[in-house]
Length: 353
Image 1 (cartoon, one colour):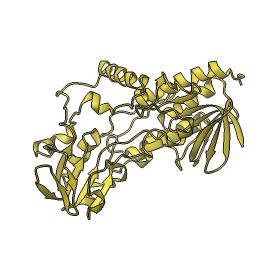
Image 2 (cartoon, rainbow, N blue to C red; image 1 turned 135 degrees about the vertical axis):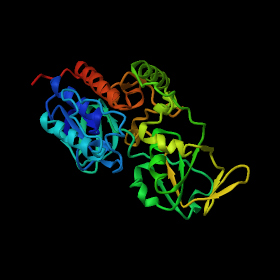
Image 3 (cartoon, rainbow, N blue to C red; image 1 turned 90 degrees about the vertical axis):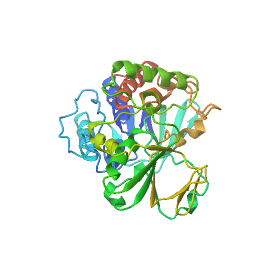
Image 4 (cartoon, helix red, strand yellow; image 1 turned 180 degrees about the vertical axis):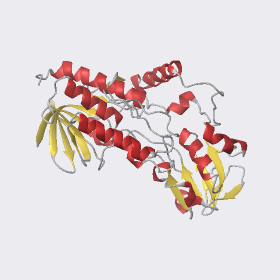
């Protein structure tokens, strides 16, 4: 069993930020801090994004601490550009990343945490969890979902709009990914959009500025402090059409229907009895926090969330969640990584190297 002071789980934006600051604050590499990443290569969830997601489509990549994001052309694929940036970052600062390692469970043993992985086991004095959400795509259950004869996929499985050429595609979900993929798919196929609630659009020209950002963080922090599951950003900010989606809007692609009542072998049926045939259903229904490996720590409240105080959990102050709740953004992940590192430095008092 390998021993270290801090195990960081995940090497995305928040995990790399935490590792960078821990090393800068005096934690030695591997003996003081180690990063366990389940991915085969650097890049976090970015390496799994669909090929058609270009840097022109990305809402913004925050700088990792110490190194600015290099310039990119609009047509560069995000699943190549961002992983390359992350790989260069890991190498530049010699961050102690071990991959691919899947953390299967974390349990408390006295004052120590024991981590079981698909490789070695680890002992640590503290945990910084930065696993994000990509490995937990959410698909809601509807009656008849298992009977559908067409193709069903989640956005995490999306591999290009051309695969739907000549088909009728139902896109389910009210987030930014649904808006983007509706525009793409409508170039090749007939589309229908269904959401639980009517979409709320931001006003034209209304920028996503610092004040809106602070409002979002305040609302999400209020929820996690109460032990409630964090809501999505779109639930707080609303949706906005970008330049590349205006043509789809003019074609009526964003005419929204309420959610159907059941799924049939050939399509779906609404509560009023109206039925429609579809060749494919794309679930753009988001993700959930990837925290199953922490189940043995019993951090969840009866409400389903985890009560937080800053970046650390209330029930286990040596367990920090970065990239969770109010820090579930690139900028938020950076800040959370620094906050967690600073608190652990003060708590564990490592010997400077």
